[in-house]
Length: 89
Image (cartoon, rainbow, N blue to C red; front, top):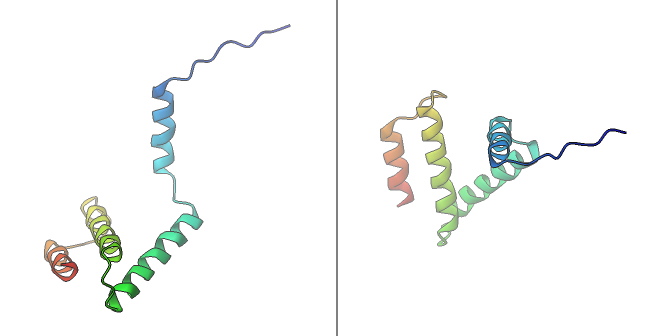
């Protein structure tokens, strides 16, 4: 009868799995949730909402778009980023 060998879980293997998961596409349910939150935040700002959360969410989306463009995915000028920052302020 064969015995199973003890398997130690290393933090290196856990990091490798996490890194691989970060490279996979985002699940559709998560994408839909993020899009809905962005749309709700925009509508809240259009309706003169005086809370900070919608503005923070839109600012995060703008910065993410800037980082993606810096990584070579589309164009996002620095002037556009400054204009968005002024609008959020």
